[in-house]
Amino acid sequence: MLDNLLESSTRTWNEEDLWLAVLTRDAAWDDFFVYGVFSTRIYCRPTCSSRRPLREKVSFFKTCDEAEAAGYRACKRCHPRQTSPDALTAGLVIRARQLIEEQPEAAFSLDELSRQVGLSPSHLHRLFKQSTGLTPHQYAAAFKLNRFKDEVKTGADLTTALYNAGYSSSSRLYEKASDRLGMTPATYRRGGAGLVINYTVVNVYLGLMLLAATPKGLCALYFGGDETELKDSLQKEYPAASLARNETPLKDWLYRLLRYLDGEPVELNLPLDLQATAFQQRVWQELRRIPAGETRTYAQVAAAIGQPAAVRAVANACAGNPVGVVTPCHRVIRSDGGLGGYRWGIERKEALLAQERRFSKKE
Image (cartoon, rainbow, N blue to C red; front, side):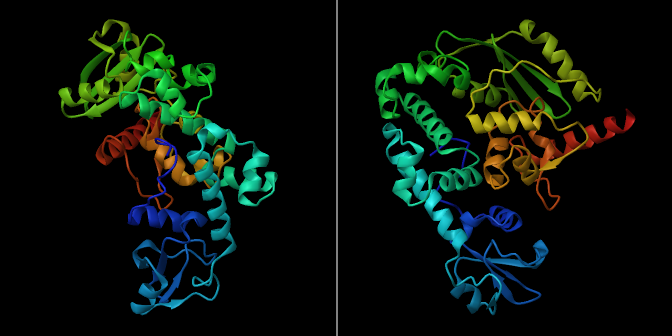
């Protein structure tokens, strides 16, 4: 499966995810749960077109039988006991994803993939992009690149890794990998061997901040409370790279960041060197367009990149952001106004938003 791109096919029972599926009427969850509304004693499928209830009035159930045993009756609008066309469509998209993942070396054309799942090419292309945020071709490319990364992280040699990932030749891998990995595949295979990453750790009002960069640009901006843990996180991503605590090449960027964190409206259009899938790149670019002092919901970000159904994939991309503040994932919140998650702790997200609201009002 894709790393930090799409959710795993094996879902966990997390009520925040379930509520997000209700808010976005996500058809991919129609076969996973139903929700009951206490005030009406009616239960619905996630895609029900009825008016959304208040969160505190909602209970979640794994089956219709479970909901009815709790005293709820089936909605007459969405008929949760019947298989919906949306659920069938979601199943066909899942089948297409499975074919791509099971046979990455096959390099299915859109026509071939369409025949396999029983949809027209144009219909599959539209539904696949609505569901995942990517075209089938983009999904296959991202899946292979992530499989390559997984292979090399577990110790496979470069040739084994590229063929296990589904590449027909090394040239296919090298065509796009430098842009996505921030380095050549051979360098990534060596865990960044030969790569010097300069870093520094400073105290800011959010705790400790680690700033790190390759010769191409910033590759990490982490927050935490323990310097050793911050450095270990960076070393885990680049296990064979040489980490040098050297503030000198970072000082101009660091100065701008410290001014920003002190409440000055400084532009943070800094050079970046990030490992990312195509979808993550699109999401992170959109996040950098959100003005300081403003927020967007995960659904709004998904709509802004032209993929309104890819709300959960947007949330995953935010969670995988390795460069806090510069790529301001803290400015993305839930549709109900809740802050949602944050890689470096919800308290830091709340503090950043409060600070940005204050200095944006002064402008």
